[in-house]
Structure formats: C-alpha cells, structure tokens
Length: 175
Image 1 (cartoon, rainbow, N blue to C red):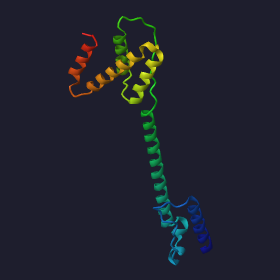
Image 2 (tube, rainbow, N blue to C red; image 1 turned 90 degrees about the horizontal axis):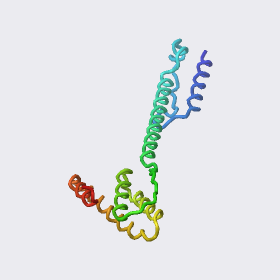
Image 3 (cartoon, helix red, strand yellow; image 1 turned 180 degrees about the vertical axis):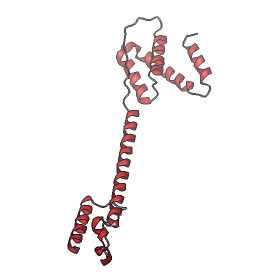
C-alpha cells in the first residue's frame, strides 16, 4: 500500500512539473509525508493538501495571466481604433466664380468643420488636395486662404469661442 501511495505522489509531482510552476507558486517543493499520513485511510482516497494548494495557486495564477493578457488586447484594440486612419470623402467640381477667394475660404471651412480636422497631418492633406485639384494660377491664392482659415480656426479655440465664431461668420460674408 505504501508503494502505491508513493507512485501516486510521483505521478502528481510529474503532472505538476509538466504544467510548470509560476513565480509565486511553491516551486514544486513537496514535503516528505509522515508515517502517520501514509497509514491513514483518508490520505489514500484524497490528494494531499499541499498538492491541492499547489493546484489552486497554479489555477489562480493562470487566471490572472489570462485576465491581464485579455485586458491588454482590449486596450490595444481601443487605442488602434482611436488612432485609425480617417477617411474623408472629397468631391471636386468645376466651378466658375466671381470671387474665388471667398469660394475657397467657404469650401475649406466647410471641410475642416464637417470632418473635424485638427491634426497638422490632416490639415496638410487637405491643403495638398486643394493644390493638386486646382490649376497653378490658383496655388498662391489657395495658400493665402488656407493660412487665413488656419489662423481663424486657432482663434475659434479661445475661451470666448461663441463671440469669435460670430465674428468669423461675419468675416466670411454670412450675415
């Protein structure tokens, strides 16, 4: 009977070692069982307390690791979705105008506000779009208007934004 108990303990040790102990675990240090424990009939039917405790610690550590990994994956996905590429749909149309400066200004303001463009990269892309879609004769005008619109956007972000927004609309010719 002692031989079968020792074989069971060796099997339990092998199983636990195959799973691999973690840093906070008992490091597979098993105590040598006493002669009283070997003789008791209860110990033959139930695994030893140390192996149960070891298994419980292992399971909890595995659960903690899974939770951390899952939380980091969720956070990474959230961050990637926030940093995702913006898709802005712009449609170019041919237009004859008596006041191209005003038309460019209105168009740029509309694009910036409708698409909530704030990053320098997005604004640079918008400017490049206007430059690429219009003839060379309008490039200097586009640059001037873009500079004016960008300055107005900076002023709109001041604490008295409501008053500034009203002034900006009036300067655009919208009353």
